[in-house]
Image (cartoon, rainbow, N blue to C red; front, side, top):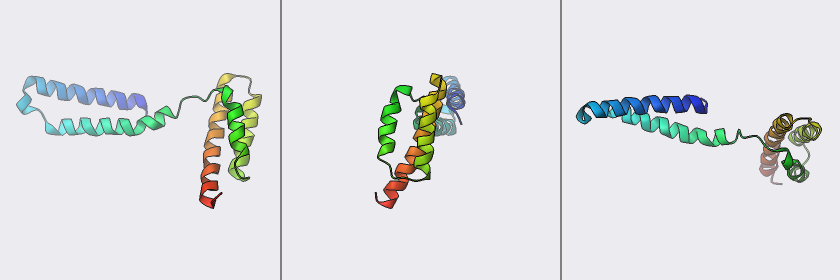
Length: 119
């Protein structure tokens, strides 16, 4: 469920609750408030994933290289280095940012594997 769908769902639920309370607060459906609370909780839980989707600027290439240099060799580290090399060769900010997102994905996997192995 993406950010727009969650926002639309929240607006619809809020509108229903608001209209029900305006007509007669005693007749307000308690279930509608529960649905609104659940939808708000879902939106909060999705927020970190949505924030993670922000593009990574190409100016972070040196930082990414330093981070990769600290990782143990392995398939995820090689994949991250491959995408970092592609980011360095990218001719547009969008392509560079897309490659850096892939670097981030594989570097996180590699770091998790290193941590699990006790390195």
